[in-house]
Length: 233
Image (cartoon, rainbow, N blue to C red; front, side):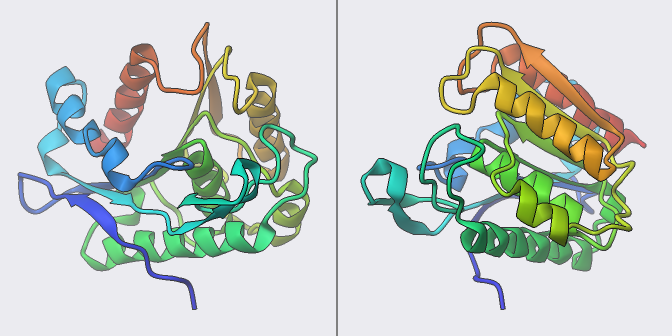
């Protein structure tokens, strides 16, 4: 049984809701760290049915993180080395978090949101979990978002992912800053190629020049256009 996590929720102001965005924060952050996003979506007016979207921002459990001298902090899985795809990996913690996200997606569908209107995404650690979760699902969702993402469990996921995935053609937005000092830009590109090798043919990798380990305004605008395409379908 997967662990239960708390979430910050922002409900659609127009009922019934037509879509849900589940967005997973990065290491040391919390759900509230991204809870400004719905307001930004409304301000930019690029998502035409913004009032009909539910948002879920899950909170990671607090656990010691090896790379930060075992200091306890919100974390979706342990990290032993920053930015090294070949370092030791916390496979157990990683896949536990994928189970949590699977449960959250199913909860939204049980509430009446069509699966093809559920967007699963995240930043950094959250991006890693959202990509992997989508590859493990046995039902199709609307889209996947990975900002400054990576895949820390390539060999394990290659064995576990759904070989008949209904999400092979699901739109995937991957964005990465070229000056990212935490998750190297090349690691991001490698992750995109990895998922393409697994069979995910609708993944688009967006590069953002001189952007570090954060989401730039240009990236957020591109993301809103991506969200709009899925919600408007």
